[in-house]
Image (cartoon, rainbow, N blue to C red):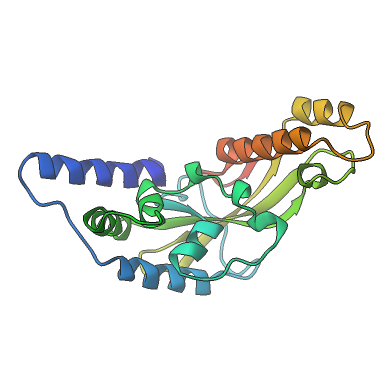
Amino acid sequence: MSGRSSTRELVVLAGALVACGSKAPEADPAAVTKLAQTIATNTPAFGGVRACGSGELVGATLTHVTLAHLAHQKVPDLPYNAAWASPPELDAPAARVLLDASPDATEARRAAAALLAAPSYVVYRLDSMDAPMAFGMKTPKRGAMSGRAIRYDRDGRPVCVTLFAIRNDEERAAWAIAHSDRAIIDPEVAQALREDLAAQYVLHAPRGASAGSAN
């Protein structure tokens, strides 16, 4: 079972409890902030933790940008920190509730409880991006980005890591190159490449496996 499925089931269960007349679990969102800060501080060095085995990448999932926002930390202005490169589909639903600009207080507390109840956490952390055309630069090449899926225990300690690589769809990249015969990249072409790279990320991000890549 994926981390997103586990957390979604917790949210659904909370709703079911309310429907049955039972009070859904609640927790202080500040506890999520503290946990997120611990996880963010415990980013392992390359080779600092063992490789994840098959089926180990389970728990509530978060992109590294979402983790930073939950921890109330500033996100550096770097290509792989762009909003489009952290698709919300990779985040546990409870995390998205907590990132709402003005969440309902009760919903926020229920989301905090759901997130804190997760058995573990998987953070998708991008480490590099080589997608010049997606940023409007005329360098005809297939876009790529790579990173690590890091599993943390409930206390925010890193347990294992899986490396992954994501690339633009080959046909989409070929189309973009063929339509980039001007002095600058057409903004629509760059946008299409960004959307495709994000979609490939969602499709190929490792889940419960020892390796993940998109060829």
